[in-house]
Length: 499
Image (cartoon, rainbow, N blue to C red; front, side):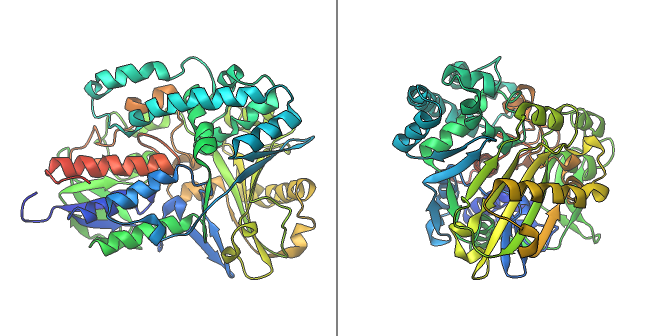
C-alpha cells in the first residue's frame, strides 16, 4: 500500500459492513461507514424501549468461531467485548401433540429421539458422522470468492462438488437418516434461517442442522445486537469512522467505476473503494443511476426468487416464566399447508408456525427486575402477496397472541404487557428491505455460490458486496464470511498483508 492511506467507504453498518470495516481499519485503511439509522447493526441492531432491550433480528448465534475469527483478524478477542452463554438445551420444538427437546449433547439428544421416535436414534449417529465429513469439505468452498467462472472451475472446487447433494430438497434428503416426518422436521426447520421452505430448500443446507449439533448455539448477554455494538467499537478503536444518521442516496460513478457516494443531504463523499452493505436488491433498484446496471437491472431483480418475510412482535411483560424455554418453535398443525401458503399461494392463515424467545430465562439484563422479554417471529409471505398489513396488523397480532396463550406457559398475556412493538413486512420494506424479504434472495441452486451476486461486484469496478444478498448468503456466520472475503479482496489489491 502506498504512503497515502486508501479510503474505504462502506454503505451500511450491518454485520457485513462492520466486519469489513473492523478488519480493514485494523490493516491501516481509512475506513468510513455511512449508516442511515441512528444506531449500528441493521437487522442485527437493538430496540431499547421502556427498560427492555430487544434484538431486532437474529437470536441464534451459530459458529461462534467465525465471529471469533473476525475479531482475531482485527487483533482483538470477542471475549473482551461480550459474554457468551452456550445453550446446552438448544430449543424446544412444539408439535400439536408433544414437545421435542433438542440438546447439543449427543447422549441426551439420542435419548430424546428414542423417547418420541423409538428405533430412530441410530440415525442421529449416522447423521453426525456423515455430515461432519461433508461439512469439513464444504466449509472452504463457502469461504472462497467467486469473481469469475475460473474461480468456480478451480480443481479444489471441482473436487468439492460431489459433496453437494443435488436433486433433493432438505426434507427429502433427511430421509437418508430418519423415517418419521416429525423427526425430519426437527432437522429441517433451520431452513427458516434463510427464509425457505424445507420442502424446496436445497439439501445442501443440511449443514445448518449439523452445525447446531456439532458446535452449539450461543446467547450473548444483553442480546445478539451487542455483537454489532462490539464490532463498531473495534472499528473506531482501529481508527475507522462511523457516520450515523447519514443515509446514502446514490453511488457516485465515473463510467462503470464507483468513486464514492452522494448522501441524502446532497454531500458528495469520495473514496478509493466502495463496499455495499445495504440490502442488495433494494440497493440495485435505488442507489444506482437508471440504466447503469444490466445483469441486475430493476426488471431482472424483480424476476429473482426471494425469501419469506416475518411478522414480529416484541413484548415486555410483567412476571417471570421459568417454564418457558429460551428458544421455542411452534409447528403449525398442518405444517406443509402452512409452508405452501407462505411460499406458493402467498396467504396467511390461522394455522401457522411461529417462534418465541424468552431470553429472560437465561439473561436478566434484557428486562427490568421481575419482568420478561418476549420476542415472537411468525414467517409470513413477502410483499409480493399484496397483503395490506396496515389493515391486518392488529387482527393478526391478536391471533398470534391467542396462540401464544394456548401453546406456551404465558397466559392472559394482554393483561401483563408493559410495552410492545410490531414490525410487519411493510415496515421491513420501508426500512430498505426489498419486498420485505428479510432473508434476501432465496437460496435456490440457481442463486447460490457463483450464481449469487459476487463479493467483488461484477457490474461496477471498485465496488464490493457484503451481507445476506451476496455470496455466501443469509445468516450471521455467512454474512461475517462475506465481510471477510471483501476485506481480503481489497487488501490483496493494495498488497496489504492479511492476518
